[in-house]
Length: 91
Image (cartoon, rainbow, N blue to C red; front, side, top):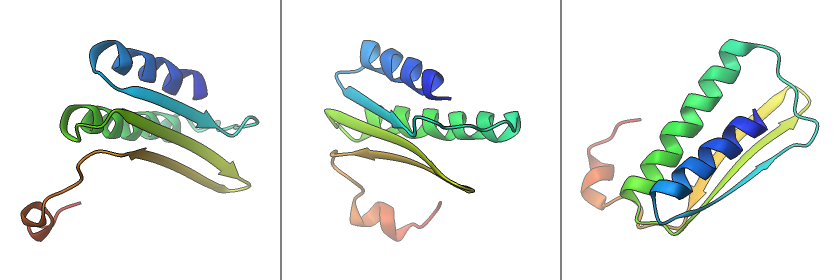
């Protein structure tokens, strides 16, 4: 999974003016390929949205595993959401 996220980050950097940093728990292990696929797609969509819409220059992706808890976070320093967008609700 770490390699896939790294490759995704390199691809995004090649297309957009953004620097992507990917950090994963070194001993990360996940054997459920359905979960792996979902995590990758969530990361992919989040990274592409940040690159396309946030006008960010940096993007940090973290995949951390602590026993049975798995956390994927995508963080940018972009412009965020307008009050109007937040008022509409959504996911």
